[in-house]
Amino acid sequence: MWRLIKALLLLLLIGGLALIAYAYIGPLFFPDDFAAPTQEVIQPVTLETN
Image 1 (cartoon, rainbow, N blue to C red):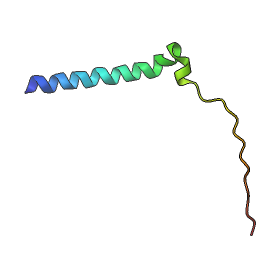
Image 2: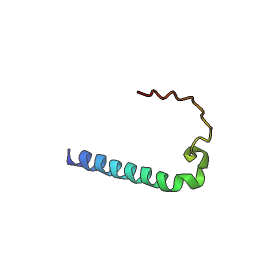
Image 3: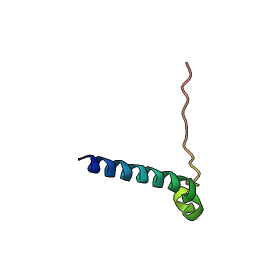
Image 4: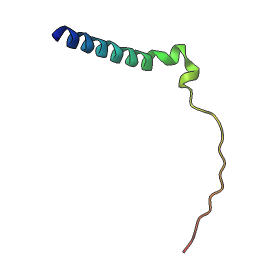
């Protein structure tokens, strides 16, 4: 049972490190996935006065 828990903790640690590496290195290799949408949005706003 202890071997299973150690294996799961190791997989969790490796998965966490992979996510952190993707967050830092990902924009260098996949810039489109990390780019913000560049679309102008124009919406009319009605302000009510008292």
